[in-house]
Structures are given as structure tokens and as C-alpha cells.
Length: 261
Ligand code: ADP
Ligand code: MG
Image 1 (cartoon, rainbow, N blue to C red):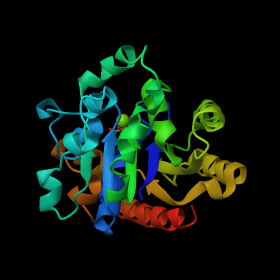
Image 2 (spheres, helix red, strand yellow):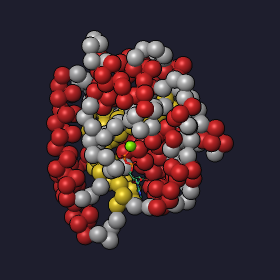
Image 3 (cartoon, helix red, strand yellow):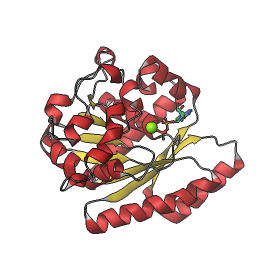
């Protein structure tokens, strides 16, 4: 039975999508069966996995509206198959931006993805959900079906402030909608050890959150930023790049972590 994780942080540009696609690829590389769900209307995780979001016939939008099942809407990426690092993709595109409004009057609207994922959960080891940069109904749908939240964060001063809102939202969802939900961990991304402030914030994080901070640190690495323009996760685009090596390490850390869940 799959463990389900949201990659969430209401800030934009913190590395959610990079984390989702590279963790998915890293897990696939070490033999795990992965479904990646793109829950952001920008569709960056879809494109970054080598699937053209404009050519998709069915997306997470159709699953949310119950027009399609995940089994019908998921696709594979030819590029990832060719690289021997394939995972299933439930894509997103701009259609998804309308879902919020269309679901306003629908009953149990925050549990739509949960119900859909349950039908395929035994086919995977991991389901990873790339959340949009907001605490919207879409993110709520992700949080309602997840066992845990992975929070990518840059070690900057304001990062800690933003965390409070996310932690409060997760507490509320835990109390009211999904008793399974917990923060699995904070992932330090785009890390540059030469910057003193980043080291300080990293220490603060460890003091505050203890073992909720993942051991793996993802360095700032330009190869990770270049990879999406080739429609590939960095892990596939340049496996020997420092950032890619770190994401495969992180995948191994996640495999260990779920043994205790
Ligand atoms: P989000 O999904 O939270 O908006 P992204 O994953 O799209 O964030 O990352 C924002 C930008 O930072 C992208 O241009 C991405 O390529 C870049 N980026 C992410 N992680 C790294 C990293 N470790 N090193 C260098 N650039 C990165
Ligand atoms: Mg994103």
C-alpha cells in the first residue's frame, strides 16, 4: 500500500516542484513504484517530467470533477522510460485553475483526491503530490489524502515565519479532516554552505524541529535548474551532478523513513 506525501509550502519558488520530480525520479531509480500527481495549474511538474501539459486529454482536473479515474488519466513519459527511471504521472494544466470554483457546492469536495488515490494505492510504494503555492482548496485536497507533508525550504530568515502558517494549517487538517496527517520533515533546499545566514538558519531549524529535519541537504546546483528546460528531472538529466546525487540520497532516506510509519 502506497505512502502518500504532499510536497507543500505556500511560498512560491521555494523548490516544491524540483523536489517532487527529483524525489519521484530518485525513488524510481532505486526501484520504488511511484505515482506523481501535479496539483498546480502551472503544470511545471508535468512538463518537468517530460509530458506536454497541452497535449493531455485527461488530467487531475478530470479526476477532481470525477469525470475520470486515476487509472484512466495517468500517463507515462517516453523520456523517463528511455532513461530507465520511469514513474506514473497524473498531470495538470490550466484547466485546474477552474476546479476551485467548480467544486464550491460539491459535497466532500476536499476528499476527492483521497477517494481517487485509494483506487490505485496498492499499485505504488509512493504517491507524491506537488502542491500549488497557496493554502487553497487544491492544497487542502492534497493534505486530506496524505500520510505526510514534505516541506522544502530555503534557509533564509523569512522561511521560518512562513512555516507558522503551514504548521497551523496542517494542525487544523489533522484535527478536523485527516488524523493521519503529519509533517514528515523539513527539507533544506538550494543550500549554500558558504552563506553564514544559511548555516545559522539551518542550525535553528535543527534545534526547533529536531528529527523532523531531514538529514539530506539539497545544495544549490545549476544542473537542477537547467533540467526542466529539457523536460527531465535533474536526477535523469545529469545523474552525477551534486544536486542529483543529493536527491537520490533523499529518496533512500524516505524509503528508510516510511519503514517507521
Ligand atoms: P516551487 O515549485 O516551490 O515554486 P521550483 O521547484 O519551481 O519551486 O523552484 C523555483 C526555481 O528554483 C526554479 O527555477 C528551479 O529550477 C530553481 N531551483 C530549485 N531547486 C534548486 C536547486 N537546488 N539549485 C538551483 N536551483 C534550484
Ligand atoms: Mg511548483
